[in-house]
Each structure stands twice: as structure tokens, then as C-alpha cells.
Image 1 (cartoon, one colour):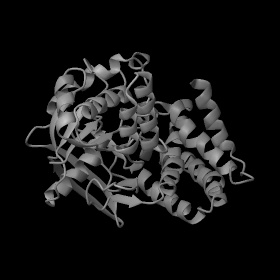
Image 2 (cartoon, helix red, strand yellow):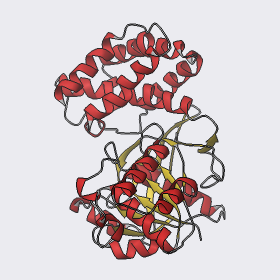
Image 3 (tube, helix red, strand yellow):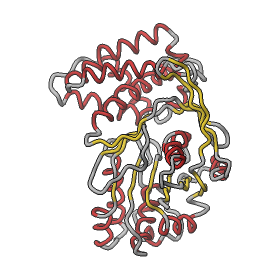
Image 4 (cartoon, helix red, strand yellow):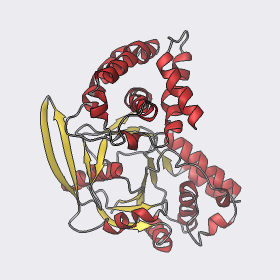
Length: 376
């Protein structure tokens, strides 16, 4: 058994990692099953946690365009065999993590690596109850695993943070130091646990209650190679690569950047509350502004970094995905944590381009970033 512990109950993970693992298991690959952990403690997801692990599985509807033709198929995902709440089922989670886990997957959102002050104490290592933050929970679980002599494992974070594996490793190491953990534990974390940098890409537009999702056909899980790391499964959407940066830059600074610009329009120009990406871009004025943004600010920035051709191709793919007639991707969902997203998707792009020399003028992006910062 290659048990996967997944932190995060999001519809994205349901239609991405969980779906890939299901399809690999259907092809007789020895991967999974998955235990899904609600790390946040939010009461509004208690029904979702309870629904995970039903033997009949849950539906993922893949709907969109492939090779210029409309497709729709429903996959019944059966890779998840249980749902746990870290707050309510902490002793059970500790035992499962120590005795069965081979891989950890996470997708904790835009502020998921923030550490609660109460987690920076020696009490963290005792794991008497669930720590407050996700990094705290992971540090406590890893310490229990190390203390009981269990094998190391692989951590595959899926948060949209550049170098997410390294950032999460360093966060956990910092917590271990703050808690006064033995030096041997820190060495085990650094030298034996595999912390992989990854990039995920798929638009998952709608939930199906209590568990399930509607997603586009396009999907990518890119993982940076390193010694000892094996692919989580063999799947057409899983790509092992020596260089993750091109994948990251294209997604963050074209697709995600475009989403953030649309969120800015939606937030500041009185657009309909339930408007979707497709509906917004059906407005010729909006479509023209997005086209201008990509042509005059984004692609020239990529060109300075020697990526004009792949950026041009990815813009074309992105616009097809935005206009997918079968997905209702609500801008209200995209607009959550808007200020933090603007920093990673716009400010980071401008800094990256400026590092190549004389950057092009970016008045449209400057305006979006200034408004996001002003609004907090």
C-alpha cells in the first residue's frame, strides 16, 4: 500500500490529484488510497469530510473542448477511502500518518503556509491535539513519525507558491527549531524526507455537493526531478521535469494573471455578482482590454526572458480555456484573497521581467496592482 495523506478537501484536488490517482489505480498501478484531511477546522465543510470515502465514490464531470470538439464525460472517483478532520480525528490521523503514509499532498490555499504563534512552542512536538496551522500540523506529524522510527516519505505540495516544496520544508524546519526539536530530527527532515517542488494547473469551476466537481479537460501536474523522487503515478497529466520555472511562469503570469485582472474589473467596475469568466469576456470591451494586456505587456515581458514563442502559444490556449462554453467559472471565487494573488501573479511578474533589463511599460498591470494594494 502506498497511502497518500491529502491535506485539503477542495474541489480542485478532487478533480486533479484524486482523479489522477483513481485513473492510475484503474490501470492497476499500486498507488493510493488517499485519506483526505480537513486541516482548517471549518464547520461548513463537515458534510464534505463525512462524504469522502463512500464506497460508491464521487463524480467529476470533465466538460469542455478537446481538439476543437466538445467533450463531456463523468468519472466516478474511488481513490479516496476516508475523510478526516484534523481537529476531530487527530489521534486517528497521527496513527495513520505514522504507520501507513508514503506520500503527503497538500493544497491549503493562498495563505496556507502562515504559521500560528501558538505553534512555535515545545508543545508542538507532543501532538496532544491538532496544532493550529497546516505547517504546525505537518511538523507535529513528521516528528511523531520520526520518533517512532517510521520510514521517511515524499511531500508533494500543490499550493501556487514558487518553490513550494522548499518553502514548506524551510517552514517546518523553522517550527522544529522553535519547538526545540533534536538536531537529529532536523537532519532527517532535510536529508531523508523528499520535499518536491510542483506546479498544478486545471480550472475546476463548480462543486458538486457534498463531494464532486466540474472541471475542464486541460490538466497539468508538473513536478521537478530530484534524487530519490518517483512520479506519484503514471498519468498523461503528470510531467516530471528538470526545470519547473517555465511551467510556473506561463501559468502564474498568463492564466492566473489574467484571472486576477478580470477579478480587478469585476471588483471595481460594478459587474454582476454571479458573473463568470466566459460571460465577462463576452463583453467586447473587456475582451479587447485583455487582448491588449497580453499583446502589449505580458508577451513583451516574456520576450525579454526568451520565452516569446511559448508565451504566445500559452496565451492562445488560455483564451480558449477562458471561453470554454461548458464551464461556469465564477469571478467571485477567483477574487478571493485578491491582494495576495496580485502580488504573486503581477508584482512577481514585473520583478522577473525587470531582472532581464529594460522592462516594457505596464500601465494596465500597474493599475491593477495599485488598486489591489490599496484595498488590502
